[in-house]
Length: 252
Image (tube, rainbow, N blue to C red; front, top):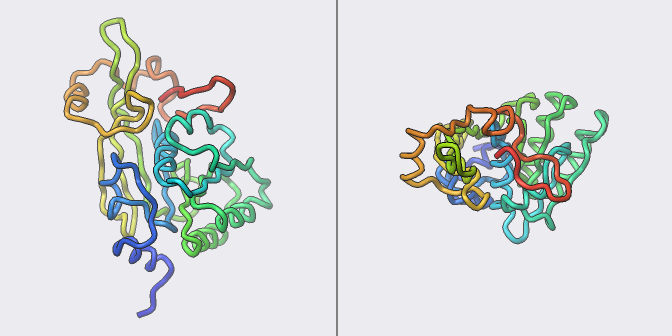
C-alpha cells in the first residue's frame, strides 16, 4: 500500500508516533491528547494569539525551539507569562514578498514550531511545498491568522469563543479570569468536531481548566465578553500586544 506524507502523519498520530505535548486543559481537542508533528494548525477568535502561545508553551518542553515569522505585534513578555520559553524563541521580521517562502522553508528545517503571521505572499504551489516540507521535518506550523491567508485547508483550526469575565461585582472588583469555549474543526485525524471550556486567562494569567463553578457563574454573569468597553478592544484584536518595557497581558 502506497501512503502519502500526510497519510503517514495521520498514522503516526494514531499509533502514538512523533508528537508534541498539548496543554492538559486542551488535551481532549487532539487525538491521543497530543499535538502531532508535521501538521498545520490555525488559531482564531478573541484570544487566539493567547491560545497559540499557551500551545507553544506546553509543546516546547525543555528542548524545543519556536520561531515566529512576521509577528511584529506579538508581545514577548505576555508570551512568556503564558508559558513560552523566551530563551528558546527566535523572532524574524516579515520577509520581503520575494523571500517569504524561502525564509519559511529554511526555518522549517531548524525549529520544532513555526508561528506564522498573515501573509499575502504565498501561492498554492509554494504553500503545498512548505506543508510537505513541514511534514517531512516533523515541524508544527501554527497560523496565527487562522489560516485565512493560506491558500490550502489546514489540518485543524481552533477558535476561541469568549463567554464571560469573572471578578467584576456591582461596580467594584477587577478582572481575574475569562471563561471561553474553544472549538476544533479540521480534516483527517482532526476531522471530528470537538470543544472544551477553559479559562484564558486563568487567575494566574495562564491557560487553566474550567471547573463547575466557572460554568455556573457564566449563566448569570453581567461581565459579558461582548462588552467592548470592559474587555478593552475589538473582539477580534490580537490579545497579545507589542512587547516593550513593562508590558504585560492586555486585552485578555
